Length: 455
Image 1 (cartoon, rainbow, N blue to C red):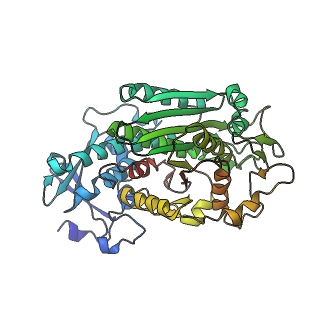
Image 2: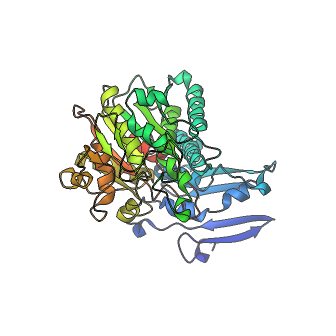
Image 3: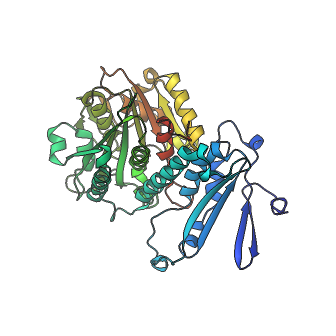
């Protein structure tokens, strides 16, 4: 009777029983889900739970997920629930947690009963717990205003995380301020040098004894993007605290992989800057010398993400030695939303095999992806400069602009690098309609690392 009362999938019907509120949500049947969506429709789960995080600060909330094959879907479902439970808030009415507040999530299968108690699902349960923590960490960083998350405080957070995993062999180093200039990281230094807090590259490593693949995770960490001297509008600038979403996603994925002890080698490379305005601002018409040695004529200071990621992939390809795969993740272009929408990140890879792997990782994890055009021989001409090796923004915005941005980054990978490369532009799926960060990227990283429950 409860289920029959729900006329549409994703819609909730609420009942009051013994002074308790019971809400039932029916998800779409599998035959109603397209091949480009996850079978359990994770976005519908997140949307259905919208606003529940406020109730959970005042009341105890029990979420029960029931499906006859829930063991297969527990991890992406857990990630979807976590997206609806953001950690950050600054509301005066929610300063204190009620003694009975909190959220418990339980998974039930027709075959196994309560799944966490079933031995066959133990590893998946651990992954579900790890991805929840990672997603909420990434979303918290994305939701923090720039007065609270500066390049200094972001780096301090990374240092604290590394210290907490010292027993797992995690290391932390950073290249900061003038050291960036002296060591040739002209993209990161140029973008971040006008801010009160100096720019930096944060590098964290983890290596399992049984690792068979070395993945370098590069993240765009612009804690606030004014657009620089190519200033954004008052409307366009709102929400630019989310411009660190790529770095937050790979950081959360890195932390979750370490927590699970996955058999992989990871190097996390974050470019952490604020694209601010001041006496030291870089300008349109400036020429930056990048870590790759190539020169870039700046024709748009608001196309800054590709400049800092170019230094990251250059570092990954010529400083680490044995990298098999470079993944760079960023809220890079508004054109990505036009290309692949607000639910799917746009991806570019050099090989069809890696493209298929990333698409499958997205479908398994719920961090959905879809391929964008890969054609450097056709698109790199958009960056032609008469005075430098390239410009940083395209001549023709109607010519696959999102793909062009990816090729700009790719052009700074060392020519001797023999591994593969994947560009993830997640400007769309990084945030929800209510302006909250989603923690996108954490589950995708775990899918690429073949975590139990995501492969």
